[in-house]
Amino acid sequence: MTRPDDPAIPASAQERPAEIRPRTTARRTPGGASRRGPADPVKTLLHHHRDLCERAVDPLEIAAGLEAHGLTDRTAARYRHRDVFALAEELYARVPPRTRAPAAGPTTGSVPVPGPDADARAAWTLLALLPGAACLATAGVLRVTEGLLGDGTRTLVTVVGAVLACLALRACLARGPLRAPEGAGRAGMYGCWLLSYAVYGEELLAQVMTGGPDGPWDGTPAPLLGLAAAVAPAAWCAHLFTVHAQRRLAGSRALEEFGAGVRPLLLASVTLFLGALLPLLLLADLGLGGSGTPVAAACLGVLFYVARLLAAHGLPEPGTAALAAACAVEAGAPALVLAARLPGLEPLAQPVNALVSTGGTGAVSALACGGAAVGLLLHAAFALSRASAHTRS
Image (cartoon, one colour):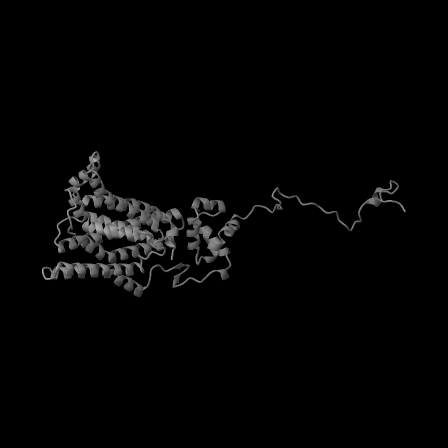
């Protein structure tokens, strides 16, 4: 027997049989994967946002979720789509239908019909009227029984009326267009401070600037009555803004187009609320014997409205920060006057003295609430122009 590598054996005899083909080695990329042409960028995006796409009941929710993650129409071009809406439609189409939950309520096409039905609107409208009714009833009882009841009884009536108004306001904010799905944080505590200052703050500051405080000070309940009566207009203005914003979202084909259409709606909503608030404050001031211009109360009402509108769309933190800033300014004014009584700290009271000499004691509250309201409105013009702010349940 001869070895296979014997030189005497011809070279043809050392070759493999014809039926066994030599194994070829595929050329691989440095990452170890075989080259199969360009990768599908939409498939990669779907893998990263599969949970969002599976939970969505229509492409609008996917578009809002992508926008919340930082995707813009310019970024959508990298995925070979003209805008985020077109990209969301493809992602929605690629998700298996069995993984999606059916949309609740009646729909028009693939977009849910915005706004509650007539019965729900009647329910939250009735709840929105209760705070004003409680305050009006309390003021009426105090006016009718003036001179007939003692100070202790009148204080008890005031406390009972305030408790009823707070309970009614809590019930109103628990449902309807002013409901905050994610809560409002510490906004309630700051709101109580601002309302208390609206009633007693001007008299307190006046006594502090004249060497006091000297004792109990009289309150001005007119701003509280006007603001409580304005809860119902605030609910309807928020409802109209939400409905028209959702319709604008359904008809938009680009995020910039939607944002440009929502900002005028926000400004119109705030203007409409202010137009309803001012007559209510004037009537409350005239009915309770006041004679002042309710500028500070109007600024406070706009601040409350914009803060609650943001909270109703899932953005409570900016409103809480704005309310806290207004509280800090109102608390800082009497604190500076009191601190200026110490030797060498007299200049601390100069800003407060200049402000009060120009616009009266109400100028402090007007500056605090007005500045916070303007800053919060500018932030809301940016935050509420995003599609993700209008797809929250």
